Image (cartoon, rainbow, N blue to C red; front, side, top):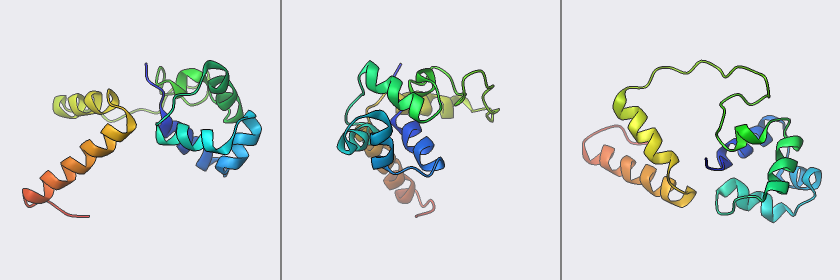
Length: 119
């Protein structure tokens, strides 16, 4: 189980909240919210519970234990992944945030060197 910082960011933005708004709702500093969303710090159990409550989701969703953002809701159907896609996704999720960004940048560089599309 790994804290899914990307889900905090996604839910916060979907609800039109700033980092400051979320911080106030959770009783934490805005700088902590920023660190959580960048994946550089993992929230304590108390902070995780406060974030989940403020974002109307579950701690399980923020920890990647379920893909349903709302407790009791069934997750949206996901397209089937090929074996290599699933392997890459598992590898990506096993890394911390800086390593994930580095891997993505490396893949983009490889794609360009193979004559693929550039951004």
